[in-house]
Length: 402
Length: 87
Image (cartoon, each protein chain N blue to C red):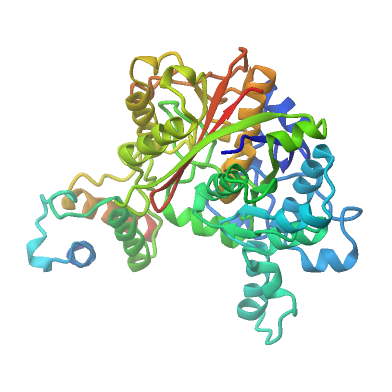
């Protein structure tokens, strides 16, 4: 088995348009959630979200690309450019043939779908733009990343709702670990903050109208975000040989299915994914100092996740720090695990633990060290990243300091 | 007002896959085998049937301004919302 390291990271999300801006916001506990600026917002009953502000395609893409790329694809490309530039890699010959892009995504080109449904249903038009299908398909982002960087290896999109990015990164990890590829580009992106996207989530009645307060007794739901996170996963010797900067090592993963309910989370399914990731990485519960929680801020997730962590960590549960950064960048659905992996990289590389902001009242059902409101400086070795999706699909990754 | 009661019971019975006569006013949703997803579906059906907005957040059903502890409380809640809408 090969060892796998991360040699590049890129992002765009409500906290920042790149990794340094995002990590600074996480250190400072800044909140990216604000009033939604979308068409027909007055017809929505949920009016907040973590939107990417100040984003303009001008200068980033040419006119033809702008017409062809949905917002979720643009986010993926912006993040991939940052990650690949940091890695210093260029893709040609054998490396290009073996390297691919595996990206998580849930909603596809939701803005494209929304705009074109309006045009045919609301405005009664009988003709749509020829790029509707290539813009809205879930694999558009992965395909455009592969085209821009000449990646000719295994490239596809993984869609498992809120666990999409973690499933995608676990798959890429597996490919590098088994020697199938020396380098893989992975992560995820999402952009559902349009009228139809928010309206669909409203129907579930799990959205908060006033803020995301994970693990806090007065939490009342999730808040959606948007953006992307993309990473370069590279075989360790390959990275060392070319003198690349190593951000962290990916040491294990596990995926499980609850096989019980389409929306209610299961403690057993979550616990099996966490303990499975530890086992895969050859770690004991006492080796883990930080968990980036799924922590959606819903009543059901946070108490189930806390119970799962308590089960797996036993007497060590009180020593492990667990925070949900969704209170800052919102829930990026299919892109969320990718942006959250940044908090794990910051934890193992910089020794800074991102806080759970908006924490107001302790909840006896979430009695863990949730790093309330303020970041902490602690040098740590191992961090986990949890993702537990609707559909009962769970994926957990383990990172280690290099 | 009995029309409202009958319609609410019909909606709940359909969700529970029961005959309306099997739904008693003191039945709880749990008694009827309606889970969280069934509950949000029932509330959606009630909103559509009466053209009202039911203040219900699945995150904290107890805190929502709509009592779902049994069929009678749901009927009373809907009657109140319908009345408020007329006045």
